Length: 94
Image 1 (tube, one colour):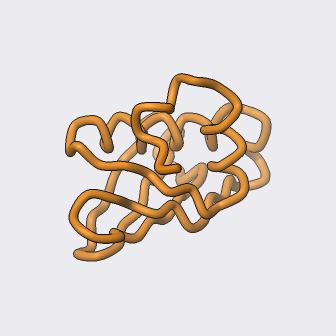
Image 2: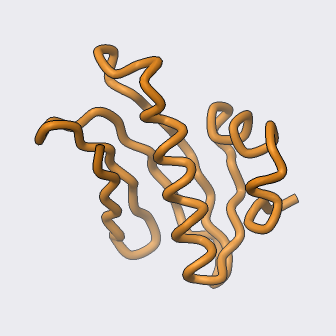
């Protein structure tokens, strides 16, 4: 599985690709200079239960660390994943 990021100015997305096919997408918007808000996570039905959503959340955290950003998870799925473990404490916006 590959996770690609597409930045479109004040918004963007992370896209999971499996065997050349889009498996899921997680969208975000920039909230100021040092924060992104994850607004939606969607995994295509044939890829559900295979860790696609979690992989996109993990990639967003990796991106946030590289860019010195905080993440505000408005999406209920991303919020649940990020609050479940301390692995994301350094990038999670409280």
